[in-house]
Image 1 (cartoon, each protein chain N blue to C red):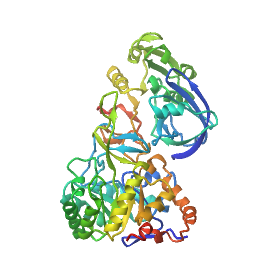
Image 2 (image 1 turned 45 degrees about the vertical axis):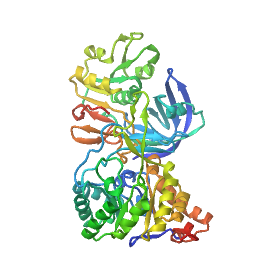
Image 3 (image 1 turned 90 degrees about the vertical axis):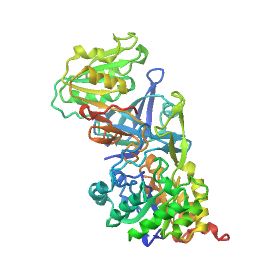
Image 4 (image 1 turned 135 degrees about the vertical axis):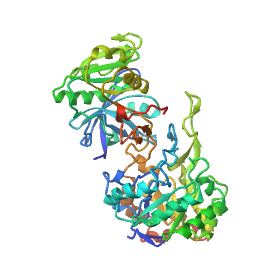
Length: 246
Length: 306
């Protein structure tokens, strides 16, 4: 059940030069799976900003996002006590009900945040996932402490300034695992599927308007035809995926 | 206070109709409110066959609005009737508006005939105005005689009322509306979106995969009013106003300009409860402007001019 509610900003924390963590308080009951997203209205901008849910605890909802334009910039400037309109319960989310024993959670850049709620859900089921995280450099590294509560965390940076030098796929060889959950830029997702034969579900991002399946602006090709990233996704299984330029 | 309006022989509880392409088949919105409070709803534009629509990026934000270039994605009329209508019926019991697109007169007629046979449908809305499909749709909406040809062919084939949805991307929308009226149209819906472009400055390329998209949202509201004004003066068939409506006072303003009913489009995408908020606010705004019966104000602003 999707909802629209006003949330109160509790805190805004700058994690890197352009990545922020905003803690919101409100009715989180519509968030039913890790990997879902919320669509947040920002003052002065017509469309909402779709942002994946990083964490939910009681009535607190955390989003972690990069300031890629004016809208996310504005969001990062909200102050504690401010009110924002949030549409929640959007997207299918990751499937945590699978019969797996050694999940790999692979994230790149601002694809890492939804892995936190995912890791927590898998951990609560008695699993100890491995998180393989890729960043450009040491100053871009985020959320390793949060993930460390539920996972063994391995980091790769492109310039080697933190952890393994190279892409996150360089960590795959020794990681083992029997299932992949991944979120990040499309070149990374594509490289993961090239580097591993494991069954996988991948979370995609797209420009979108409504975020709930009505406007059809986030449509993508899949092996089962046209699908909406917002409501049929954002998570698709590897068998579904057709790589196209979006 | 009476919010009922009479549109092409149908009585609507209120003039609110979510616009085609912004409301799916209704059930997408039923988590947010009981959509039976709507006057009606216009389903996603439907063609004869399944269409993916445009490749690449399909949406861009603008000041007070948005561009879309979906390109008539839909599963085709048979799928819509077989699969979508039963889902729509579960949450919406009133007659809906079938929005129909085509690439030939024959296609418009074929789709219209199929919807004409559906109990779920009260009005056929013929879209001769999609700006996002090349050589289709809009080709029939930019020329009065072509628009008249489509109108006449569809009218001959169906029993339900036919409303022609027109494009604002023309020199004289009133001439096209008049041609549709003369060809037997039961109503005119205007406006569809205005053609627009945005550039991705990093890539130095158009942002949208289709290059151009259709502008909607509050930015187009006064443009819609100007065209409704002009068509109201020229035609005597009812007008469904559409373009940038966001609030109950927008609805009343648009009706005073000449609209009998009002479609709400982009507002649904940014506020899924937009139509509910508008319907709930109508009585207080009617009170503010001393309106007892909403139907009394249709075209009221033309009082000394018409």
